[in-house]
Image (cartoon, rainbow, N blue to C red; front, side, top):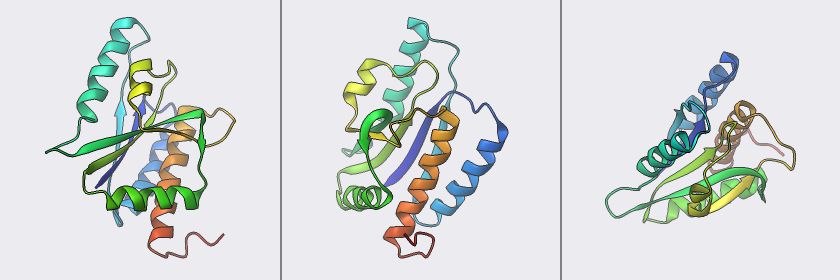
Length: 157
């Protein structure tokens, strides 16, 4: 099973990319992992339609297997690190799941059709974070979840 973090919009600060790359490299030791950035021109109906088409292609699944789409929202379910680790364990045990895609919206949000198609919504906090910071936190939490699953000393709460 593949884990992907899909971020809408370019990172505003290069420093976030460097930190995300560090966590991505760590996670890749445990799992098939990828970060994907989708650049957006604006929030016109045409731009949002292009975004929906791109996301549909990315999250379509393969060979009879499906992708689970989880979008980030301050209104989603609050998952602590142990809960995320448990969810990843469960997803890995389902042979019909080809990928789990974590979707981070950009400054214009996400199309309603995409939100409705998602399997779940995850909240990092009731506070709203800039998408770059959310991107970094999601990468760190996925690494931490795999550290928990594999008994690494990284997570010692």
